[in-house]
Image 1 (cartoon, rainbow, N blue to C red):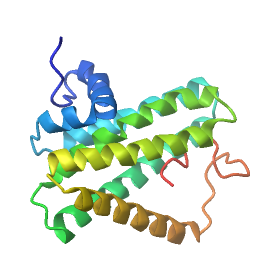
Image 2 (cartoon, rainbow, N blue to C red):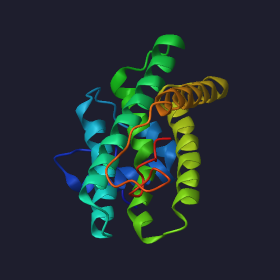
Image 3 (cartoon, rainbow, N blue to C red):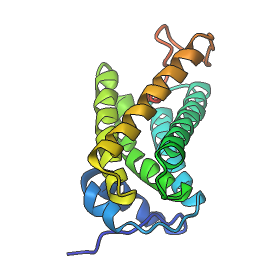
Length: 199
């Protein structure tokens, strides 16, 4: 039986999918043995690849380049804001000693489940329901990741995730009060799969 990959290495592209799969489907085992090198570039590069692959899939499916680019930027910004909330609540408010690189790894690798977005352009009519399931799964993965890496108790991990989600919803509601039109948007405000994935 092959040993589980310990961390993503952007210089070794072959580690990308194993990390995404292990974090998503062997969550506790993966995060319990994950190497936390403390750098910020590695998990950010992982997150960028996740969204880039989803964007390439949308291009292949025929979505306009402007809409796809807008969706990529939007998803990255929203995820980075959420990461900032998790780190602020977990490290500064809840006083957990895990460093920024550690929190970043937990959130970014948990977001590996968003790779499911590569099939969304080819499943019209099921995109919204599937993304809801993806986000529920992401929050569960994040909860177990925080428990394994940050040594949070059940209540601490659940509180950190819940407060971050509430903070994100409030922030998105505030931002949503300002009307911003993305390129080639349809009536629902989503022109390519995953554009609204950060909601």
